[in-house]
Length: 112
Ligand SMILES: [Zn+2]
Image (cartoon, rainbow, N blue to C red; front, side, top):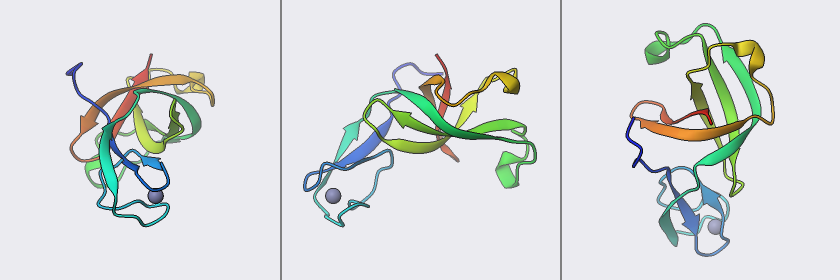
C-alpha cells in the first residue's frame, strides 16, 4: 500500500458534479469542461453485498464485500472493501477510507 496514492476524479466546471472516475465529459450535464481533481478519501457505506462467487479476475478475490461508498464530498462509487475478516460486522453507515487503486477494478476501500 502506498499512502501517497490519491483517489482521482473529475469535477464539472458547469454544474460542479463530481465523479470518482477520470472521464472526458460530465456524466451529469454533458459538458466537456471538466477538471481532474483529487477527492477526499473517507466515506460511508451506503449499500453493500457480500459476493461469494466472483467471475473472471474477481474469482480469486471471493468472498469479498462489494459496496457503494459515499465520500465526504457526496461522490458515490462502487468499490471493494478489503481486509474484512468478519462479514457479519459490515453495516450500512460504516466509515471506510480509500486504500489504493487496483488497476483492474479501480478504487479499493478499507475500514478506518
Ligand atoms: Zn456537469
